[in-house]
Image (tube, rainbow, N blue to C red):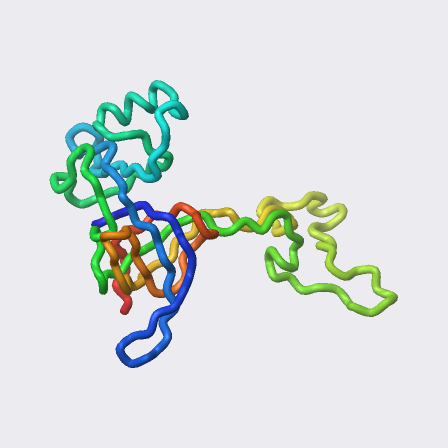
Length: 210
């Protein structure tokens, strides 16, 4: 399994050989570095920790700074651990660029979705609304959520108003349309989670449904 950390730049469009418009998302994919390697013998599983988005040493505390110095790399703002099938192909301090993936690969991309703030039940859960007539006093409110005497309380898990968005979302089976290693850019077909400049994780897909 291949993995990488990137930053969502935005969306644009390309045209394929037949002149069909293809919506694509532009991702700044690297450069990233391997900051830690976990093995089956020592940790019980195989994984690599990848660092992305370089930052100043003065903004890093001593324990974290020691972690990066052990790997022989400059401090990174973002760290992500990903499980891999074989850690022997990685080494501490190894630099990873966009050419980790190639055109035609299929990937799964995870990231935080856009935050929508506090929303009511109509937008958050797609509930129906009350009458829109002038005399009605029930338009967009939740209404009754439990019986008065039996059970006399609201059961856990009832849908209600609250914060919407800003949760981890994974979009599977996205095709890599173009890779530009010189500029560390990767273009994938379709939309990916999160706002512009949001940090995302790219992995080899687990479902090959072409």
